[in-house]
Length: 113
Length: 522
Image 1 (cartoon, one colour):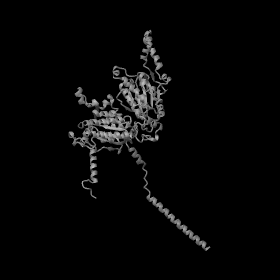
Image 2 (cartoon, helix red, strand yellow):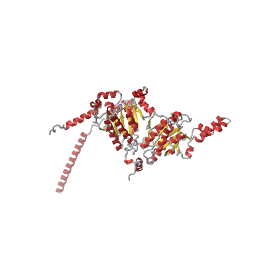
Image 3 (cartoon, one colour):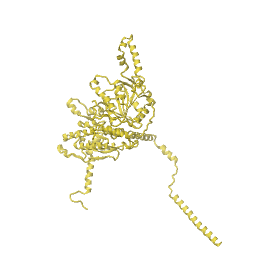
């Protein structure tokens, strides 16, 4: 019976020690996370609204027109961003057409036997 | 470790190279560059920077110089010798390019220049990539004598060998005189900037020989070649605008004759039906309309690039996109001379069709033509052989061909303008089409001469017969009856009809009989 009491005491002490250390570790981690977190940006809806309204509508219109004009120009020049595939890409070539073009472009050559 | 005696160290060798390169970049020097800018023109290297993608230029022959000692040229040796040549990229596409440097001996054409240009011509042809030439040269280098003339010939022969194989675009950005004009003339497209000039003999020679006093601009300026001679396909207010046009033009062309032009992502709905087309043709027969509007409404928005807009304005030629694919457009222009065909229009149309055929660009033809322009002047100047060029070009072309008769298609002009017999793949007509051998009044005078003469009221009888003729022939349905028109379509349907037709014909392959070359009427 004495052994049983002694065993329970030791178990309670061991478990208590482990849980204490775990709690200490938890507290430590929480502290580190709090210290390491970036400073929270204070929401400033009014300031943001002010910035947005501060943009000159004429400037916004000019930027919009410039962006559209740039896109139109890139499209007109068949720029890479607008192209479906690379010029001469074999991935999109039709074998029928490729063979036909070969015949068309060599029709004048004398046969070699 | 010390360098061996009499051999410069590596650092000294690099210094020499860097010094030569720096001199090459300077061209003719700061003063000449200032003069070039004062004329409102860019230098060769500034033009190349505007044309090519940043950092893509690889120069060849930057250090080449002439070895002529006569006429004081020994003291005028500049690395590069007045032309910058090499390879670069335009919108990611490889191209070969040369640019005359006017700041070096007026860009005068020398044997060294020829060697540099023919070198890139050769490499461009072997690699199957377009060649762009930025011309700004005072002409042949007189001090080199016949060597300079032979040098031109070397360039010409390579222009011809590359013709129809790789696209060749010439920009005229300064003077281009004498033999120098033939190289651009042998290329596929000529773009001129205002202030530039092209002529075989300059104003001084013209004055001495013929007594005519004329300025360089009036003799061979951009305005003259874009409107009267037809030498220039496009003109621009300055160098930068001309270069932008070249980049746009290149967007419609393939790298070579074995490839297709680059398609772009479709941005205009293929099935867009434009109801304004239904009412675009005026109800009154003699009223005109602008065929450009038809083209603008049918093809992808804002994609139409008209070529030679001021030359032979009775015909319309240019490139556009349909569902993202490059298309060549030929049309009569009823707003000018009622769309009648004449010598200049025939030349313009036939040349354009052959360009499209060479570079695998489908041709769509809009027909509204009352016929060939009658007149003594036209007949004397050979409208027959010039008109025959259109027939030749259509018959010879193996690319997809589609025609749409919007209104008049009369007589020989109907046959010539992409009729089914010209190996046109699909022929459409709008309900407003009038397909007949000739106009109603002349037809009645031929067919019913006696009936009209013997009638109690000849004028009333003539009117009655004209109305009868109109009812019978001035519609597309008789042509559709006999299969000369595949389908009569509503104007608003034109866009999606064309999209689907060209989708079908995208893999069309046709082979002409073997021959060295045909003999197109000239």
